[in-house]
Amino acid sequence: MQAQDIQQLIEEQLPDARALVQGDDGVHFEAVVVSAAFIGKSLVQQHRLVYAALGERMEREEIHALALKTYTPEAWQKRQS
Image (cartoon, rainbow, N blue to C red):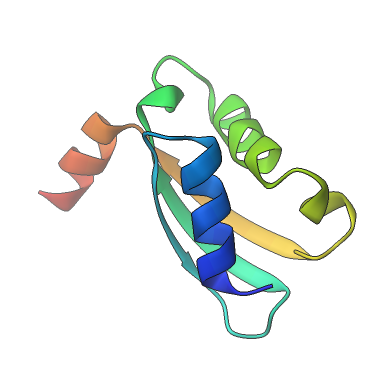
């Protein structure tokens, strides 16, 4: 699995999401995901949304490790300032 495949899956399953995924060994990845779907949700709930978007790929270990950073659009904007 490639980083761009993971990015596409996340953005397809969380339609308003923007994802930046990095990783070059095919199994270990880092992702930054910005989505309005995260508003009002705990960090754990946000991460569960992303894992749900990846579905069985995590269970089958096509993605062995995914380090996540999730942000609401407002939190992301503040971080960029």
